[in-house]
Image 1: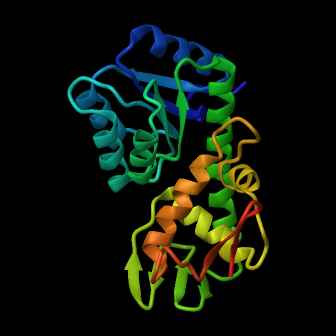
Image 2 (image 1 turned 90 degrees about the vertical axis):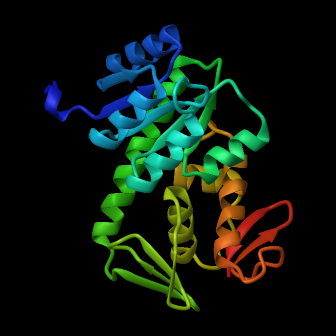
Length: 235
C-alpha cells in the first residue's frame, strides 16, 4: 500500500459541496490524495502554491470564474487541467481548451468515468515526461519548425511560439509520425490517453489552435493537413 507521500495529489475547485464530496470520495477510494477548494480565489491560490498532479476545475465559481483560473494556472504550470462543467456550449469548450485546459467532462457524469479520465490524464502526463527524457535528440526539426523536447519550447523561423500542454503534445506526436494519417479518435487515444471516454471534437479544437500558431495561412495549412472523412496528417 502506498504511503500518503507517494499518492498523486488532486485539487478540486468546485463550489457545489455535494459534487465536490462525491468526486473526492471516489478519487480517494482510487488511491488519490484530494484537496477541495470551493472559492475561485482560494482555488487559484492553492493551484499556484501547491504541488498537484491534476486539477478538476468547475467553470462557474464565486470570486474568480473557472476560465480565468485556467488561464492563470496555465501561465505558471503544465499540470493537467480537467474542466468539470454543466455548461456545454461549444464556445465555452473552445474558450476553456484555448486557455490551456487539457480536457473537459460534463455534468452530470458517472463517478467511474471521472476516475477513469483522471487516471488516464495522469498516466499520459507521466508517459510523455518519460518519453521526453528518453529522446535520443532533444531537438526535432520539421522545415521551419524546431522543437526542443528538453525545454518544451517551439520555434518557427527562430521565433518562439507559445503552445499549451496538449498543443505541444499534438505537435510533437505529429512530427514524430510525419506522413501518417490519424483519425480524431486515434489522436484522442494517443494524446489524451483515453479510449472512447471523451469527446474527440477536443482534437479538432486543438488542431485549429495549432494551425493558427504554426501555419502561414491557417485556412490553407501546409503542415497539418486534413484528409476529408479520414483524419489528419503532418506533411
